[in-house]
Length: 86
Image (cartoon, one colour):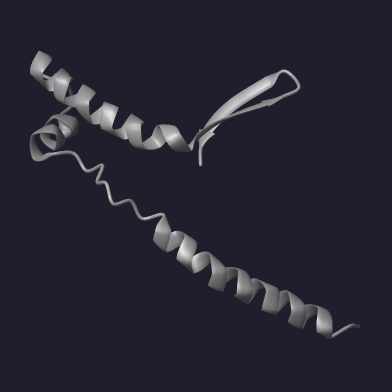
C-alpha cells in the first residue's frame, strides 16, 4: 500500500480549504437585503391588508431580484432546461 497517497490527499484538502477561506470572505455582501421595519412587518403578516402593503412587498422583491439576478444561471442539456442561483 502506498502511504504517500493519503498524505497527498490530506495535503490537497488542507490547501483547498486554506485557499477557499478568502473566497468565502469575499462573498459577504456589503448590500443588505434585510427588509426595512415597515416591510418586515408586512412580510411577517399572514396576508397584505391593502395596496400599500403590496407595494412594500413589491419593492423588497425588486431589491432581492436586483441582487440575485447576476448570479442566476440557465442550463440546457439535450432538450432539458433548468435554472439556478450560484
